[in-house]
Amino acid sequence: MQRIDHTLPWSHLGTERRLSVFRYGHGPRKAYIQASLHADELPGMRTAWELKQRLNDLEAQGLLKGVIELVPVANPIGLDQHLQSAHMGRFELGSGKNFNRSFVELSAPVAQRIGERLGDDPAANITLIRQTMAQVLDELPAPPSQLEALHRLLLRHACDADITLDLHCDFEAAIHLYALPQHWPQWRSLAARLKAGVALLCEDSGGSSFDESCSSPWLRLAKAFPEAVIPPANLATTLELGSMGDTRVEQARANCEAILGFLAEQGFISGDWPPAPADCCEGFPFEGTQYLFAPHHGVVSFLREAGEWVEQGDPLFEVVDPLSDRVTTVRAGTSGVLFALDRGRYTQPGIWQAKVAGREPIRAGKLIND
Image 1 (tube, rainbow, N blue to C red):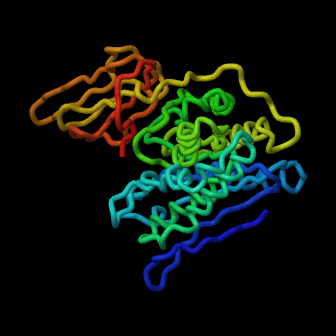
Image 2: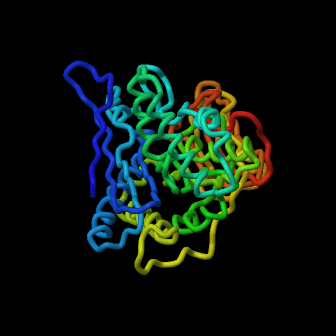
Image 3: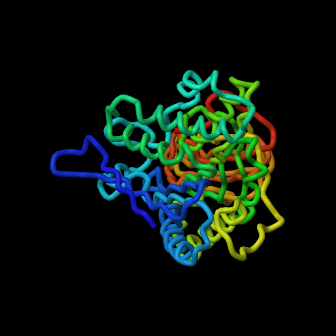
C-alpha cells in the first residue's frame, strides 16, 4: 500500500489540511473509491475503513489484479465544520457552496486539444483522452480557494479510473445509487449485492456533481466526435449507503463485501467470491423522481418508511400546525419507491420532506437538489 498525502492550499495561519489517498495493487486498470464528500454523511467513511483493512489483506495475499485507490476522508474541510455541536458537512460555510457541485467540466477543453488526433482505435483514444484530462487539470490556474483545490485533487485521481465509486448517504433512506442510464447494465450487480432499493438514471442532473464529472465527459466526447470510437471508459456512480445513522459494524462490513465482490467481478481481485444475487432493484429515470414538500410550517409525522413502494395518492406524511390546528396530509403524486425522507421533524415550505422514484418522467431541467 502506498499512502499519498496532498496538502491543501489556503489554510489559515498555524493550520494545515491534507487529503490522503491510499493506493493498493498495480496494473493498467484502476478503480477509485472516495467517501464522505458530504462530510457529515459517515456510512461511506465507516465502509471505507473496512475496505482499508480488507484491501491490506488482499494485497498481502497477492490477490489484487489492478490499482485500487481509496480516499476514506474525501472532505477534510467539511469534517472540521461544527456549529454549536451540529456538524455542517454538506456546504462550505464560508461560501455556502455544496461540496458536491460545480466540478470542472473536462469534455470541452479536452475536445479542443485532441479533436484531430482521435481515430478508430478505442484503446488509443482512451489513453489519449485520459492523458489530456490530466494535462487540463494540471495546467489550470492556481485554485482561488481551498474548496476548488480539493475538487481538482479528487478529480485528478479519478479521471483516469475505469470504475469510480463516490460513497454518500441520505438523511433517512434506502440504499440507492445515481448513474448514467448507459451504465445501468454494469451496475446491476453492485446494486443487487448492496440490496439497493432503486437506481436513479440520467445523463445530466444539472449540478456538475463528482460522479457525472467523471463519467459524462466520455459521452459528450463520443457525441462531439461520432466518427471516432470513444467508449464510456469511466464507470462512475454515487452510492447512497442508506441513512446518516447507518454506521453499524455489520452494515459497514456488508457494504464493504458487496463492493469487493463487485470489483472482483470486474477483474480487479482474484479468488472465490459469491455471485451477485439474482434479485435486483429497478433503474428509473431520475426525471421520474418527485420531491414532496410541506404546504405550511409545522411538525412532520411520516406515515411510511423509506424503501417502501407507494402508489399515487398514498399518504406519506402529515404536517401539523399546533397553533392554528391546521393538519395537512401530503400524498404521493406518482407511484414508485419512497427512497428518502428528511431528517428534520419541523418543516416549512420549500424544504423537501420525501423523495419518490417513479418509472415515468415528470420533471425536466435541473434534477438534483442542493
